[in-house]
Image (cartoon, rainbow, N blue to C red; front, side, top):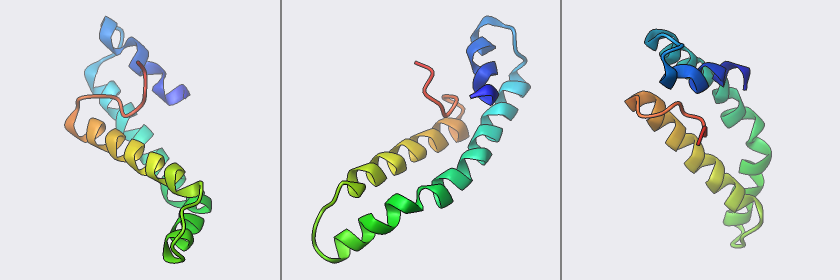
Length: 87
C-alpha cells in the first residue's frame, strides 16, 4: 500500500510522470509472487474439485483473483490505470 501512495497524488501535479510509471510497474512486479505462489492454496483445491466434477468455494475465489490480476496487468501495461483500485 505504501508503494501505491504516489498514485493518490499523481492527478494533482505533485508527482512526476516517470515516477508514477515506476511505482506502477514496481507494484505489478511485487504482486507476481502473491499471484503465483501465495494463491496456490486456492488454485490447487479448485483444480482438484473441477477434476472430480464438483464446484467448491475455491473456484469463485480463483476466478476473482485471476480476473482482478488480469485487469490490473492490462491497466498497467496500457497506461490506463494504476493497477490498483483507487476509486
